[in-house]
Amino acid sequence: MNIPWENKPAGCRDTVWRYSANPIIKRDQLSDSNSIFNSAVVPFGKGFAGVFRCDDRNRRMTLHAGFSQDGINWDIRPETIRFERENPEAGEWVYGYDPRVCFIEDRYWVCWCNGYFGPTIGVAWTKDFEHFHQVENAFLPYNRNGVLFPRKIDGMYAMLSRPSDTGHTAFGDIFLSFSKDMEFWGRHRHVMSPAPFEESAWQCMKIGAGPTPIETKEGWLVIFHGVLRSCNGYVYSFGSALLDLEKPWKVLARSGQYLLSPQTLYECTGDVPNVAFPCAALHDPETGRVAIYYGCADTVTGLAFGYIDEIIEFTKRTNIVK
Ligand code: BMA
Image 1 (cartoon, rainbow, N blue to C red):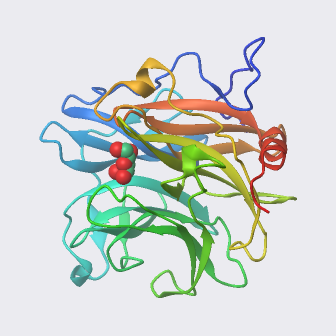
Image 2 (image 1 turned 90 degrees about the vertical axis):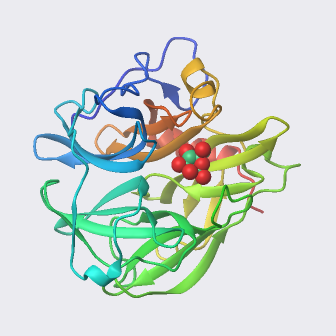
């Protein structure tokens, strides 16, 4: 599969490296966008499609569909996604942000942080990225970072999520829930808590799942963000974990080091400084390549690359799971 790619720069010792032409999506790509970041893409047709977080110049958080031939140059639709609600009682549109997209069986499922008396997980499906069918919210408020697995596990859909609060949540564990029908969610399992700061400070305040987990022989490869509270505010980095294939609430390994932390100008300056927030990853099983899409400083969208085998090796080498 022809996913975006750029070889590791000579002399680079990092497991994951940035695209040299970052950011790939600028803040004002739409005529009325304030920022475009924390967005999700998938293979679609001969190219790629995605759901983009576009905050407009009223500073409303909205979702837009987008299409691309190469995964780098994106045609983001100027109009917001108008979700068709199967049951209008499920709630009026208030706001939506931090989308994830996951192909399961015959359709693309979109999860996002949906305003319903506070943030919770909105769910919709589409087959064409033109029509989006919204189903029930997965959970009660407050919750964020809903991330689906790309296949059923034990005959059920599975979703990671991160219970939170109404504001800038100063805590946060990742949980796993199951559903037979994408409507009723249960059998909740704890997956991971923030790490002790003595062990891995970049993920010591809160954590949340990022891209759709990638199935590998060694387990589900999960890329997740972690937050450090510094004297100057929150710092968002991302690392990796391996979850058991059939019991994905069991963490086999978890990186003590970050894969990427905000260090470039476009990650360190913007509407919210010091944020690297991954929401999607394209991968090519044949070459083992992975292309990670991440929001930078809540302002623009960046791309980073790596090899699945090397990220797995990194996860095990820097493991903090006892
Ligand atoms: C989180 C979410 C993200 C955002 C991050 C940093 O709580 O709101 O959308 O990128 O904070 O501001």
